[in-house]
Image: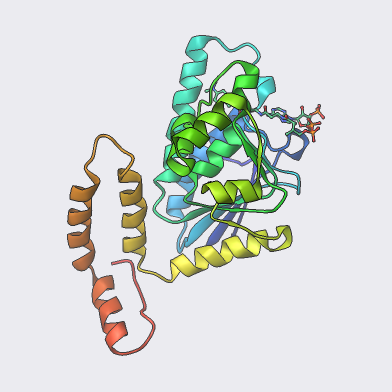
Length: 260
Ligand code: DAK
């Protein structure tokens, strides 16, 4: 697939993905959703030596200002449900991606944009970032997982307030509530996001992938996270990486993990 709305910069094992529709404040139209789906399902898994992904928005005003409102003027109920299903599938690909995905939130993260940031494993925000789920202003609800993931990050009461009022919160408030991991100066945002990916890339990659899977398992109703942890612990102790990690500790050196 040729990317029209995403810029992909693959350097030193980190894919920096920029949603690039600045005239529409990087709103997610259908094409952009298809590109994100292809990126996480087909493209990134095949990239040799991928350490992780940093997701951001073009320009210094917006991360993603929501789904593209201009594209859903004539939607009917069946089309809306199909779109939501595809959006869920796409954002689940991000959430379940085996390498860390860090959102570098550089401005508005509204509606589908807030949902996209929440599907990432970690969120860094610039001071001017703004978060919100303003769908009720349009007479709809969040359709890309927002009603569920927002509760996971900020709790039922806070989520209920944001979802019902459509209020926007600033980066500091988002940090205080647990929606973002850290607020960093705009000028340092991408560098900090890259540093975070690098830090995680130095750990055992099979263990990292399992942790991503297990943390999500807590929120799934179809699996028992505790039972999954027991199995996954057995799996990681049987890896060459664990042998290397333990040996490196004893020999007082840095481990060289091979993902085996
Ligand atoms: N969609 C399309 N265009 C958008 C947009 C959006 N979400 N947000 C901004 N733009 C466009 C504006 O129309 C404007 O374009 P022109 O008029 O210049 O052609 C340009 O970006 C610059 O925006 P503003 O002139 O409005 O900029 P301001 O600084 O004055 O205001 C703002 C910035 C972010 C406060 C404002 O643009 C704004 O309120 N934007 C809309 C925020 C919003 O309500 N986002 C949508 C949330 S609802 C679904 C699944 C999911 C969803 C929907 C359906 N299905 C499964 C069916 C999700 C829905 C949402 O995300």
